[in-house]
Image 1 (cartoon, rainbow, N blue to C red):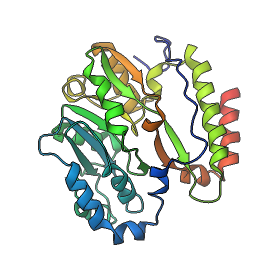
Image 2 (cartoon, rainbow, N blue to C red):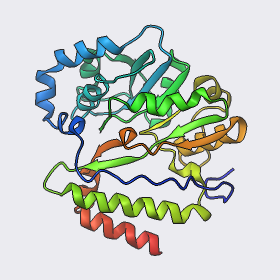
Image 3 (cartoon, helix red, strand yellow):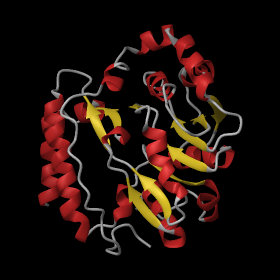
Image 4 (cartoon, rainbow, N blue to C red):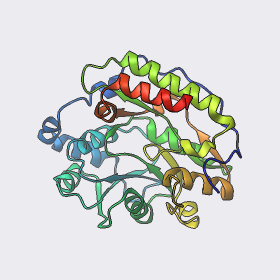
Length: 280
């Protein structure tokens, strides 16, 4: 089982991406200091949604994320869901203030000493109280509808795993319009690439969901060298339990900072680098 094998067709459904930032993203665009100063409000909102008997557990690995973790938790604290949920953050042995911020936010805290996202997600999987596991990242912004959009399809027995898409919001002066075209090109590339790539490579850790019992039964995030832990889990779940389902509703988009693109030398340079990979 390798992720580059041609075994399944890719979901052809395409949804036009947002040209501008939605309000729930704009509302979370504050400095880390602002979130620290307002952590009591995050805690109050978090307590409203946290359940002792959840159906869904959102698992967030975090390693030295003091700059972004409160923004992520602030967005999740505004979740609107028809289900009982818990937000579980796995501190992957951080050396900054990440642990302290998690504990003050009202989210459930878990410590995992062994570093590596595989170990953090595995710890979260086994500690989760919910029937359904929903993966999230510590540097992203989530829609109030995200949890239900990603997990309610799992009520159908034939769906083994859902996975979503992500979009960029600019930290600096890059136009959202640029990212609209950048992401739309990526969607087109994935659609044309479906004949050569396995759908499971698009199961991302920032937005994917599955049943806890089934995840444990396939040995969770263990994966062979050269493969991705999230995609490989999706592949194992599909082969044993059912289908992968891509969620294309824009309210399920995960919004992530463009900081990594900026680190490559800027968004246009990152775009050119990816174009070269495509044509290579």
